[in-house]
Length: 546
Image 1 (cartoon, rainbow, N blue to C red):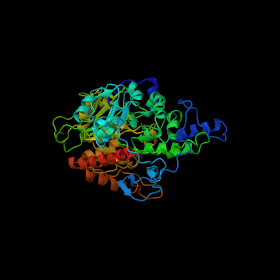
Image 2 (cartoon, rainbow, N blue to C red):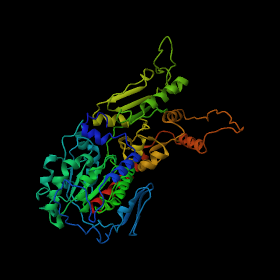
Image 3 (spheres, rainbow, N blue to C red):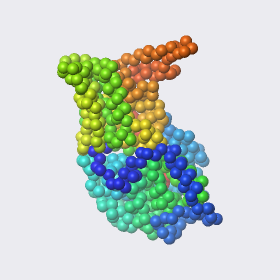
Image 4 (cartoon, rainbow, N blue to C red):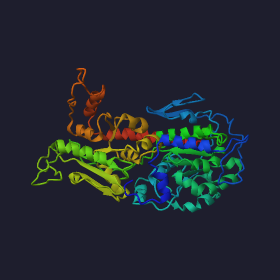
């Protein structure tokens, strides 16, 4: 989100571990295994902050009867249903944890939900889930939010779109105590005198340290027929130690659900869970049974009326942190400068001139057929823009949520510009907010096959733009802006054959040109409706105890 405040050192450790890749995690795991103690006849469960734990469900994780609900998978083709029980494994998303025969699927209905976070960010993520659950519960007031005051006008967004009908925000410090109360949910007759039966934490990588011990005491204090479920929203799988330190007790009780915000982060957690299930110290905890549900954090924004678009692509945006370890601004700047140095006119700029502008490209203002191209950077941090691009790159920092959403929705296209050092993270273990923000603000996202495979909810050509990886982002923008492309002139190879672009590239570029860069309001309405239904189905299953 644009304009994020300076994070504490602990928050930075959790959220900005950009030096790791999935391979690094495997190496760390091997080192951990080699240095761990020898297995004992009994389960060597790691030391837990929930001391002297009494497992009320120990030994009874298996054997629950199948639920009457159909099996659902959320593949690239959208929602898929089958009435078949047993294993329902999707190679891409690991949906076997939604099987009817899953041992935790008791079918217990959840009606009274508390959503909380100690962290002062990610409000757009967990409030998106609040919106989904509120629309499914007997009363929207059956959701209570425990959070500090929202930053930068986000409360105005919540009010504007009716995101939280409960309206009152509660002190996170009162969450555990409120779990013992029976007078908090009275909007529906059937909930009078009953306690909350589900707790959602907005950033479990941080929140579990603050909440888990007190929440688990409340869990153990309840009788077996009055337990509650803990749902952990997770943002990355870089730091997962908290799931062993704070999560083992919840897993052994069958009371934990994990909720990533993208399918590829889900796959990373499934990998860890399966790994821990085969590890001597954790094999008797039950990690392989933890259900993992993906909820895409897209808010139903009321976007301002968009001005009529130019015929030529004019405004592109890169949203997110200005940290060079996250996004390749230097590479984007260099590619843009090379294009301008070769011929600035297609971009709407005059050539450099020793008399008028020797170091900076100036826009052409007297030819409306070639509007100047602008690259907007919306985020936080420090960034140095090359002098040549001083009139082309527009930097936006410290925006309120309303201003940020207005800026984003006015853009023609959004770029991801992931840095080489971070691609492993954003493609394997961490979800980029830039993807959800583009979808939320209805800005066509410039994608590749790889991006669409990872962020599966971007696979629809009706709302995204597909470029072959052969074209870097700036080169693709030039093609989309001009509507033309010619294969490069390549020298003949030594054996006399004429070198060419790889097979398939020309066809994909021609298709990119044919589809153009504009997307219709109707295509967005259809897409948003489908995404909302996907999220609602996840919410239904969560509330049904799955």
